[in-house]
Image (tube, rainbow, N blue to C red; front, side, top):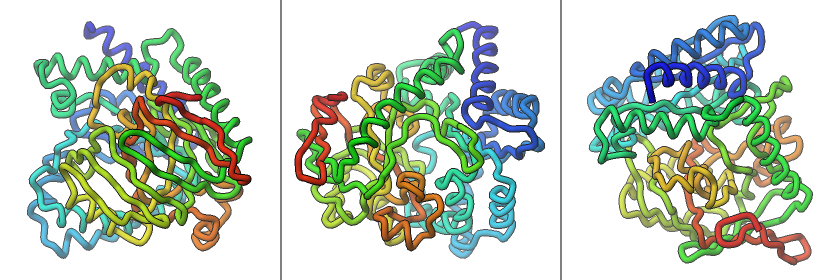
Length: 411
């Protein structure tokens, strides 16, 4: 694309992020998490945020080089002890009901070669320090969105046969396409897409299946669903009644798993980028709601550290349905990025559930949520397990079944 065309689309993208992604309201605080390499997009987002009436925009720049040096060389004590200012900033974000914008562009292999125990220790410590922000986000007490930006290392991972410039341009094209920037009115296109997914969610909510049974050549898994669970698709609403789009792109409808009723085995169908490493060919075996065995071609040690994070890390918090013929899946591209790859495939998430996934869940404390079957954890890590040969049946309370997916698509 020409420079002028790219800059026009990038401006449209920033506008979409502010208007549809987090739906900024006058007087709001905005927190933007973005790489130092994405200054142009950052400036456009900041400009759009203030134009929409934001009171302040806090920019949290990240830099892969700096993070890698820290993880490789900081003392063990520092890895496990987070400075008080981090907790104070987290409390400020929650108190302001800030809109959170996370722009992902980092190298999927950013931390490859670094001792996974050091990474796990720091992530566990940061998880505790940012607990209030995570809870507020998962409870939809504030608006939030996760979007992407093209950068060289990631683009070359996705398109290794292209030059650096060609790969970055191609990845931007895919980001714009999947986020509907190529359509005449991107905001209207998202409204229509939102309604399509809401219709799927309504059918599932009306059915109130007690469990889902997944079968394919690589998976045979039964997942219980909590009583009064709620399926949600595309747009969400904050506790203040503000609609926002948590992920762009998104092709899923999702709800919570019943943490105590998960049995069988499930195999990943796409690579998972986690903790700066690529994890491939993962197989989890579950019994009575918890992982009892892990097998992986790469990253098994990382997964073992992950599920040992806390008591809930070895169970599931989310089940999400995505048709195999989704636009991202049809592209044939493996993005090595969960934001995109999860929208090409049915997926599950280890760790915490979203409280809004059951009726009145946002008003419940942790004890009540756990009693209702929702998983509690510091982590929430999605992995892709859908395929073109996957069938899913919904199991009703009386034992009868209804087809939900056949051969990877809605039945």
